[in-house]
Length: 467
Image 1 (tube, rainbow, N blue to C red):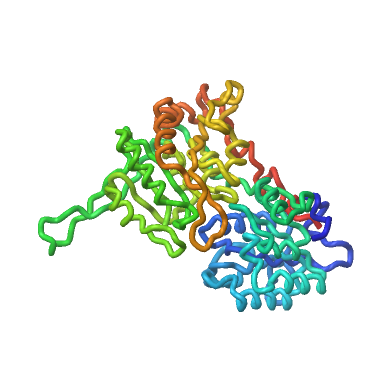
Image 2: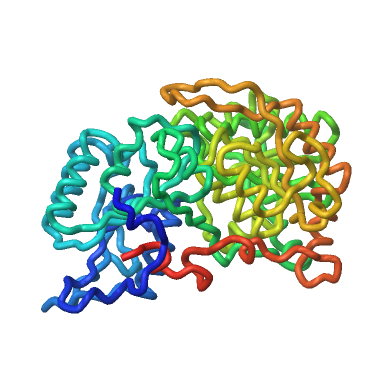
């Protein structure tokens, strides 16, 4: 990797040097149409680049965008995004045939830059980094890699960095984990936090009360099993409900079973807790069958917990505001999109202190517990956001095919810490209403003011791409 990646500065993104080639970018990663964390980042970065910098290349057929995307998970559906999207596969997206197809598109497309948004280990396969480096060097194509790190790395997982002219990590944790694995403490890697969308913000007391009206329809039992059961509409949140929200993938790395176990523990302590999961009910990635697991734990769907599918950002922002606590038991995060979106809505967050979560929690405000479990001092308390509740962790373990050591949230300690935080007024319905924006006793600015937003005015597209 060249030393040009040492600083994130650029006088111009859209206009090439006099006589140079027009800028034409090929992005590689989750399709911007996909409802994933990577998809959200790709969508916002591409949109911002288009708005601020990227021009179209005039052609007889009305002009072809100079911004293209090799979109993982894209199946050809119409979209209104200002870029052309190539279907990049789904489950086989990093297979040798798929990566060869990407290299062919890159070779035929007269591109000037490649933007790669992906975990480094997923790209360091099948000799892909060497082929990419050779092709880009021969054609004068610059490569930027923007990536998260959610666990310790191994040197062999970082081959893609050799193909990158510029490497940018989401967090300091990602940069240091990369350097540690490479054994190079000064290796040039930049850090650009990917932030949160501006639609995630705290609501007024009135709007939050409306957001807490979360209605579902369920079948009610019928006396005759041969008779179709009638459907009954009900409000999931009651006046005294302690509503916990989780927004994540259903996979082993997110440990959704632990969230259900915490709910059971809180209810046994007579906390009127309920858990709303924005999560797929079943998983092909080592997660759990949510409904079956909850039933075995004695939880009734629609009464103590429920799950929903993807929702529009505006509705998701309402759910964050409706919740008394955002809960995550993840075994590792490269960023923590749900955590930062919840914080931007001033929702207290309960999470483990590891990987990038520790960095984000410390940057945005300490909560009820310090680094070793002690209470924060008065000055730190005054600066705190509504609350970061650090959940204790158990001894590390290795799970499945992943060889990295992970630390799981300790069940009893997590239950006790959330119980005490609620009992001491650090989270709960009354606390949320007292911290609503516009009230005299709200000392907390929106998190977005504290965290750079790569697709907002605070950070321009050219700040992410040095030319």
